[in-house]
Image (spheres, helix red, strand yellow):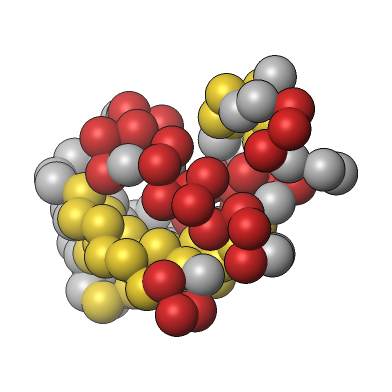
Length: 110
């Protein structure tokens, strides 16, 4: 079945210059292996196609049940240079939570 990440995660985002920073945190410990498997840097890059113009890096934080993504060249130069409405990347977390992944029903009890 397909589910949106917002069913099993919450997220926070911000900026470091022109790099968006998104933390994706599983709501339950048992959801962490699911996001670790399905939410790859490549999938996130594809999800943000046209917004993220550079590379996407993924960092795993299993003790926090979280993944952290750096979205390079995503903010139009950063807060003081950008003409984008969201120059600090605050909406990137909400956008990532809209990503759909394919899971087996037995993996997720909503």
